[in-house]
Image (cartoon, rainbow, N blue to C red; front, side):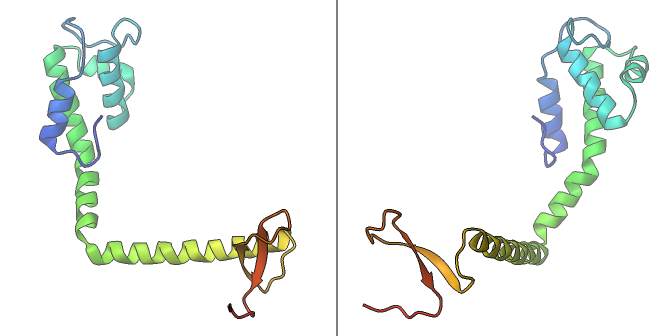
Length: 152
């Protein structure tokens, strides 16, 4: 598995370890040559070129040469993404602001959902929270009002 944050060397090691056959050319035959075909699919997806074009462009390469080509395509395509991820992860102030904004948005959505559910189940809109009790009512749950004070 190649990660967006993998270094160039890590990508090269992973691609070199990809299982392929010993046929000395590049072709797209998913049933007969699944390993090479997978690499062709990767190059096709990362480069935006069709499988046929990739095979034609790489027809002169042996398996090792093709794996090196796959590495070059992956590294070049993932470099800007990896750079952006690293830059964002290093910006603690930005990450904190994203977390704060996400927390606020989640709280707002949760409040709306909670209010809607209370209305649907017939609880008073002043009801603050459902509290578990052992009242013997059969349900074990009673609504506690936000306007009542806690005592006892």
